[in-house]
Image (cartoon, rainbow, N blue to C red; front, side, top):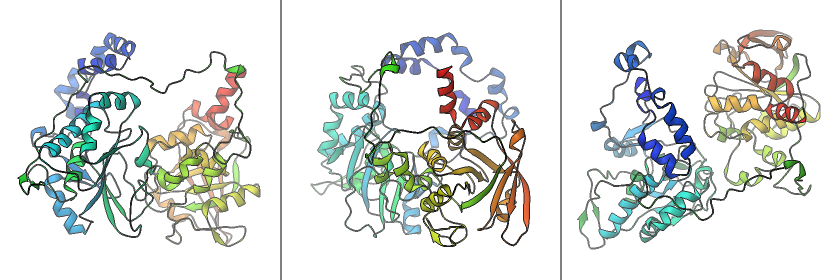
Length: 502
């Protein structure tokens, strides 16, 4: 809902409902293990009694007064209570007509989510309403898909024009057939996905993507209008009668239990040493991975600035999804999308950076390849919360593959920072964010202090400017000793390989 909850997060400990869910999804062993330490899977009594002593901020929320919210567009950080959303749509001039509603993917696609959305779809059928916007449903797993189909929910969606997609990431990362008569026209969609960055869902920067619960998405899809408030407004049915949608209902667990014929899991071979993976060397979509090189044992000097990214730089900016995902098994080909969505600080353009070897401007991946071919490493500089978004490993693997040695930013999104460490990259943050302003377009950069690389010990950056001057400043990191070993070995996978050989 756009608010951080302090002490109250510890309220949601392990309980009987979680145990029932684990047992119902064939994870009874996990439930048994949790039952043994159940009393420890919650907050301490003294914390509940005096939470203000243990948290920097205590936020109290009256759940009886909490409204459904809609987030967006272009970011999940901007939230609107449903009672104020219509006014926000009109005030900002966002396209009021809703073209597509999408529920599901890995987020908000549980049995309960689907059943609650289906209860609204059934109401639409009973009250003679048909969805005015396109409607897609993406079950979160084959287990959920099979079960909700068995229980008739998918048929219910189809009765109001819903289209059931494969249980996969799908439209959340742009993998769907978006029907649009003009890609240059501003338009609105709403999803129950967890991300709505510009161009993410359909590759179109003109698409205003909003995020809400599956129930709100379903209700607005039936209305086809972003200004519709399902809590208070009515709709005109096919008989010309004004009808109102009732509160949705759902089931936490299927009454008949979960069921599936083929969950899609194939157990690995007991003896993997006898398995050969053969890939056509001419394949454009599959490529065997070569181990990344280990650290050379010295300070890293002579790096070229590849890009100084300005503002938001999510994993979608770093490694776009959509059509690019057909190359997700081919690291070299998918690396041609590296940082093509990031805004260059020096010209406010995307995918246009200066090649210091030629003096010309060109695409980010091509420039990185030029440096790599010349045996020169590069460095990427970024702003706040760099790497926000999906936990997409390609966003860390691609820079590593194209010769980027370090990512230096004001702050990292936590998961992306960890992914960089796993690939043997240096993930560094400015000790003083004002040092971001010292970095110039033609800088050659050294990273020093690596011979004494240790947890909690800063490293140093040396900027060599083309006018002969230089700047030196400290940078921080959060590496523990195991992660430092990953860096030295060239990546976590190299450590695993060494342990297997040992």
